[in-house]
Amino acid sequence: MQDLDPESPTLWDAFRKKHVKATPEEWVRQDALRRFVLDAGYPPEAIAVERGIEVLGLQKRFDAAIFHQGNLWMLVECKAPSVPLSEAVVDQWMRYNLSTQAPWGALTNGKQWHIFHAHSLKSTAVLPAFGTFVL
Image (cartoon, rainbow, N blue to C red; front, side, top):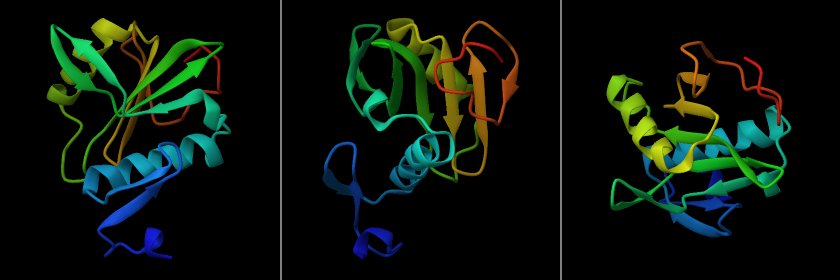
């Protein structure tokens, strides 16, 4: 059960169907994915992990994205637990969202969660019901 061993150099990513390097940020991403599926009931087939996007002419990769009825619904940014969810993290999400236009955003460092509608200043730590657009 090396996948549950915090000393293991790799983690099994069921979404990408491969072992990935067990960095602090990856632990947070895997925990976030688990929360989306097990705690909040999001269907695994609606989740994309670490895919390429073009941001202001540069190739970047988002941490996770949630799709609903074929449309991007939520863009997720994960940080290592040592990284505070600062204005710089929000700015990164906003730059990525220039390309993706997700109506919802989620930021987490594993200790804190900020879930928000892209056009609202309101934030919550509770995942919205899958497919809803109400905060």
